[in-house]
Length: 180
Image 1 (cartoon, helix red, strand yellow):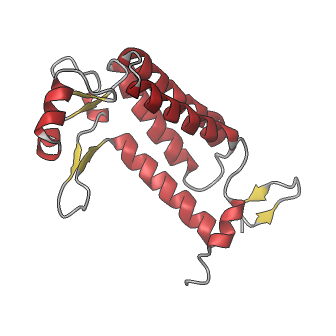
Image 2 (spheres, rainbow, N blue to C red):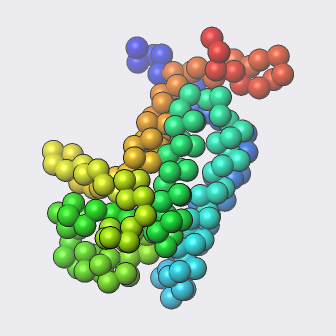
């Protein structure tokens, strides 16, 4: 079994439109720098959300890879709930209070968290927000969304099938095929 899962197989990981996820990373590094230098929080949140749009061409072009449809669904659900809630991911205040430091909770409640807002009566589609607690014995307690879970399933499926070598063969058009 160990021989079957091999890192040399990752050379066949989906590469069509790979520059789009790379642009996403560059934008988010830039946003981190902008946040540290005093850029407008609203602009940072909007650009952060829009940076995820750079994943769509990559995911759509590689939709036949195992797990990619889960990634598309998860990213879409997260973007939808963020768009509808002031470009921030709403998080359940009860569970967030259990995992966040007192200072982080107070800052989030006051609106200073760039990426999260506490759920309240004005939250739209709260069920798509961060409402699922992952508490101890999970080693890194957090609150996740349905979209986060779909993204995790998709990325795991994609990684496992790539490590297993499912994409090592090319079809007649020279494209990697996941059919065996």
